[in-house]
Image (cartoon, rainbow, N blue to C red; front, side, top):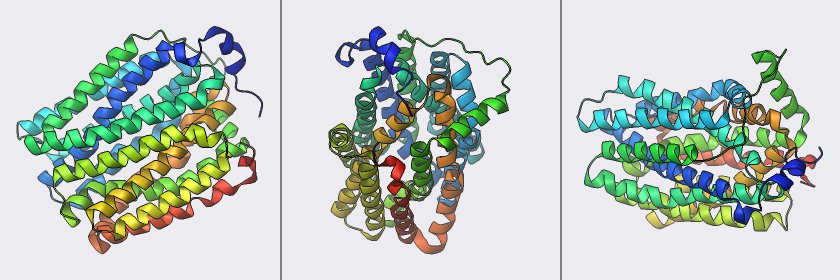
Length: 408
């Protein structure tokens, strides 16, 4: 497909990775934000459980939070047409306010489900815009040859947050209540806002004369379909994301209600899983030096899917910890590879739309999966639902065998 559009020009303008302080500040802001997100993932299910005690309600909340995925094409247009730094700042500020309000209302004892529904939808919408803009911003901050390393580091700091934050969140929730955990999440978005505000990002206002919004969206879609390595990784991710969404929607509920773990134990189980994810992210670049993207993605997908299946079958704390760590290791091995494939093969003016198209294609069934998770849990139990999720995730590895990924 040719060399990445940023590699030739930016190699002379941007410093080597070790001296690129802007990208390290950018990732530092991400770390703070990721930290808060992991606490949020524990706090929200426990809030819903406290208010309703219903897995169906949790499924509805998870579905609403993921519903903005359907608006991904518009997030891509925003990212390609407007100042990406401004979008990142707006999303951080908006999430800071929404999460903080939910936390305060729960602490005061006046939070009701009808308040949670629009709030989580808004948080999900802002997160979609933020994630797309973040993806499109990274190639403008680093040299093309440093993309794989930066994506691995970014995945690593995300998993560092996964390692530390759930344990901290569990302690906060067990000592106080989930509302205070959300106040910590709100503060993390504010700190991320300040970190991004300090950056000098070389992103300018963009104009697309003669191209309508729908024409711009279609341009991104056509590019994805014609670029086979991107297309087939997306097809694999469709089934993978469906299975993992079934699993993740029920994860905290399953550990609390079915396995009878306390909040602190749940936090530590998730944190230990984060340690496996950090290892996966760190070793991703090392594996890339010896193996093709196809080998890494196929192997990680198979092993990761089987780990979810085994997670649903096991009841011992040790076994659950091991399976969760294996699954997070595999997921974090795959993520930098998929991101780098997209960034390397996509010109700068299409980065936002290509990422948005990819997210829409691979995440379009997430709201349905989240809703079905609650229904299946009530009908066949959380154990069998999670095992089904693992089987689906394992089968998702097949598209990674496509020949277009052999030399990638």
